Length: 270
Image (cartoon, rainbow, N blue to C red):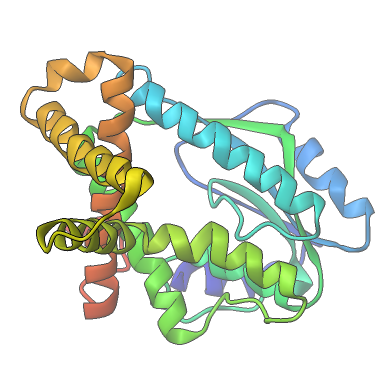
């Protein structure tokens, strides 16, 4: 973030594109990304980065997850604003850059949401395509996702990147897409605890809640089996369950790091 703050003060181009170092762009990606700025309402544009993850055990499940994510981003953009750009490929009007704090973890989220705060649109350009190779296995991927969650908690604690309550639909998108995801692990644990407690005291859960409680306990068992015996993750259904609980474990770890301030800003430290 410190580097970005310095560079943005020294360049004069009308549009600035941000990228991750390991993302390979399609030859026409930049043209398709910046063509959206012909619309004066658009202040930032996020591209579509596809993960190349054939060599990781959870690859198919992750691809399904990002298919849903890209769909949500597209629909959010069509209704005025995505909830944060994809830091691997996005562009902004330079005049709209507002530098976040130097120790900001989710710089892409905060920078792009500050554009939204100024009344401009943040849209998704699905034809601006890049590819990012993911080679991290489960433990490292949990750490990466936990870092993102910790960055989200940092935003909440500082009030950075949070849209105004009005218009309400913008705030609804923020809560439903970001906040609930950041706290998904805590919400899942709370739900499981309440269901088990009610069952322990003999309360009548009814057929729906009983099914949910069995599903959560069974899912935990399946996810644990997939962790102990990685070969089991070759079965697609089991892989999906394992990936779902992996996401929620990362959420718990990220919340802990975010609220305790234990998440480092740098990706790696020497």
